Amino acid sequence: MTSDLSRLAPIALTMGEPAGIGPELAPAAFDALRGEVPFFLIGDPNHLPAGCKFSEISTPAEAHDTQDLPVLRHDFGPDRTPGTPLGAHAQHVVDVIARAVRLVQEGEASAICTNPIHKKALKDGAGFRFPGHTEFLADLAGGAEVVMMLACEELRVVPATIHIPLSEVPSTLSQDRLAQVIRTTHDALIRDFGLATPRIAVAGLNPHAGEGGAMGMEEITMISPLLDELRSEGLDLSGPRSADTMFHSAARAGYDAAICMYHDQALIPIKTIDFAGGVNVTLGLPFVRTSPDHGTAFDIAGQGKADPSSLIAALRMGWTMANARKAGLRNTNHKDGTR
Image 1 (cartoon, rainbow, N blue to C red):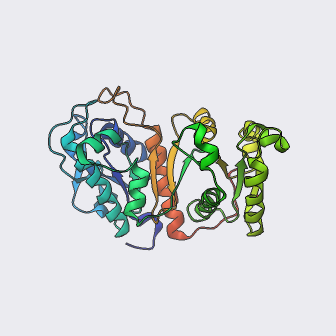
Image 2 (image 1 turned 60 degrees about the horizontal axis):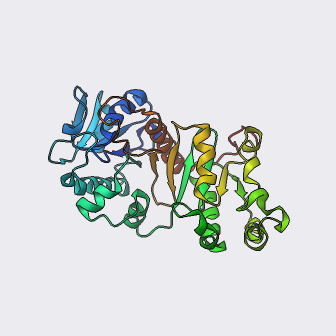
Image 3 (image 1 turned 45 degrees about the vertical axis):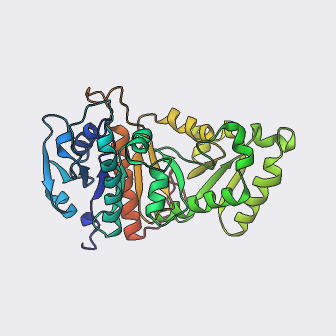
């Protein structure tokens, strides 16, 4: 592999659950990104849509030179039935993810982009013991402490807590957890997004960020002291901010990422701004990983209705991040073009 960024290793795209929309999104994304973002699909070409043009490759490097969707073959066995996952496919879905990780660790891929999986199908068919992709990838990376970011052109959000009941959020939040989330986000904005001095906005937990303790004390007892400590380390942080006023366009221009206290506080604004084009990014891994921000969509699989916008955005963002890591890019341009 040369030092020329145009010959950076291609992205490894996993097929995901073959009964879902992943197999039909891959060729659509290839057509949209031809000549812009090199990637190859790891999976079974027999599970691609009828009439799909593909080129079977033996090494990832060949993906740079194919005119059709490059596929690194991994046989899944029985034919797919769109909308109905098969237990016989489950272990292959898991193995493809692990194979993608090996390729990026060996330098044959520059990043990983993962098509959606079906957790119950993997648990039932392969004894999959992880809540999802993120935790599995962290385990394959040696137990990395990871953070989930959702990103689009206009907004990056990071929830400090994710898939837990709202009633458990206050007891789950801690200064240690919040510090890890903020530091990981700060480091990723530098390393993966090329920002020399990232600006991070931190939401409060309570309405109006507690309003001086009238609506909750977490901002006073936990969040504000932590932000002061991190500011003393040189981090550019604002907050705790009232979540209801930090996502309009003028407010977004003042920061590069928003740390939110719980799932819906983070995901409602980004899905409102760009429902079809959001990207899931795993921060804290030793390699770049992105994925489309949607599931397997069994209800429309195989019907030609799936929108590839999120996968296209995920591949494009993964390529940008991989280039930033490779080049060690550092610049002072923020999302709004200032500084």
